[in-house]
Each structure stands twice: as C-alpha cells, then as structure tokens.
Length: 188
Image (cartoon, rainbow, N blue to C red):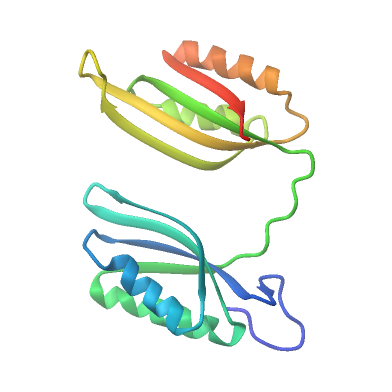
C-alpha cells in the first residue's frame, strides 16, 4: 500500500486510494454483502465491478476507493476473508492515462464452438495494438441443432493507427477461417 505523507502517490486522490479487488470463492448468498460491508466500514466507496457465477464458483473484480489512511486496514480486512474460503487480492491502481484519438468499438462473435477462438481473436487484436477492455463469452445450445454455439461480445479500444475498415476486413477474414460470424461496430 502507498504510505501516507506529504508526497501523495498517483494512486491517491482527493477521493482516496483507488484499489482493484479480485474475488474468487465457492458461490453462496452473501459474498458481495460481506465484502461491501468491509469496504463501507473503512469509509470506502464501491465504484465499479463485474461479478459472476462460473461453474459453481463466484468470481469478481471491483474498483473501490478508500481514504489513504484506511487503505492498508481495508486490505487486511479483505485478506482475513480467506478464513471463510473467500480469496481476495487487492492492488492499488493508478488513473488510466487519456487515450487521445482512440476509437471505442464493439465486437460480436458467434459460431460453432471449438478450441482456439478466443486465442485467435485476441492474438489478431493484440498484433494491431487494439486493447480488449471488456470481454464476455458463453457457450449455449444452438436454436435449431442444439449443438454448442460460442458467443462473445468485446469492448475494444483501437489506436488511431488502426483504420476501422481495415480492422473489419481482417476480422472478417479471420472469422471465415475460424468458421464464425464476426461483426464490428462503433461503441456509442
């Protein structure tokens, strides 16, 4: 944790220290309540999160702010949840640098499920400097055949050097090779 002195770190602001929490435990009622109670007890603010049940486990990530003087205490409180089978990792985070000229886009993928889809798409995007800011995937039963259907939605941040038309063409070509439908649109 950042020490509190006259030279504040870049992770400390007037609102406090920004912390990213990752949580994994067997799913059961009350997990979020217990964690949010600890944040509130240390006068923290729950700012953004994504949490889900995956294969019987609860998995989540949250960004909270806490007063600088309380951030180390909050981290210790959260670490103590391990005794209840709740693994919480706490990391300080700096404000994200502005991404001037970057374009927000949405990527939708659908097709017969098979190995390597996420890896192929992620490699293609990374090779062009495109950041995947959010990714949600699922495998569901196809409406007509009942076979496994892979679906994905991703929020992307494209650098100015990547032309959207060129990115679409490349993704379309990759989609054909993978046997999946790929669509890309502006994220408005």
